[in-house]
Image (cartoon, rainbow, N blue to C red; front, side):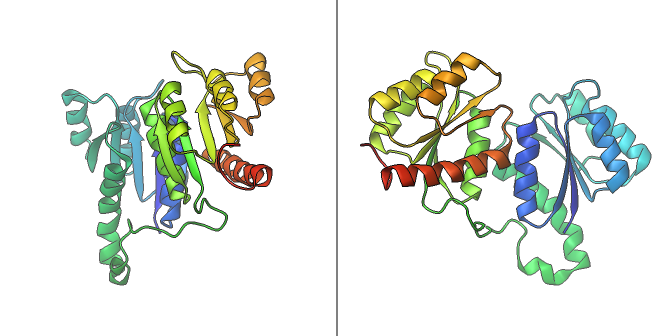
Length: 275
């Protein structure tokens, strides 16, 4: 097991990596800004640090400089959505293991991290090399089983991260990038539960939910919203949503809400589908 520090101002990325790496037996600490990241680095001296390049107040290069002052041999990987040749050169000069774009899939990111983590582990404990760190893990008790979830969000990174997180929990997951696409998909293959963004262009989440109910969709709906709009929340609850969760998404709370939603949907309909 390795101690890993993830420093990123996007909470969803921190939560997902904490869950995924935790499943592989690693102890994961997360920080949402550079100063908090440095405090955790000083306290825990992680085996590996994944560091976002672009953060408010203190960017990744500034954090990396201070990490090097604390431990010149610390293993660090830079993660960015915006990279540039100049920034990459700065990071390389400061001895980072890799420089990865956030546009890469989670699989590519995980493979790079696994490669970095495996090298010393193989030298210290050859017996562990027989079981690859990236090997698929069994779904935990109380996870998805055969439940089918549809995720609807106009932000591709959110769709990708939620799909990967819920797939790891054992769910069958499809994604839609807008309300009309979601309605078409539900007509074709009815999900047991829908995770639905409240604010999307052309058709917002409440309107999608209203049309779903008009079409006799009986499954559960979890609405995701970045702001507290009492009118919107009231409309959603009146239309029978299972839960309303804030954005950025708390992944563990979402997983619990989905488990509850699947149970309630099963009790209400005796199965999955339209009435």
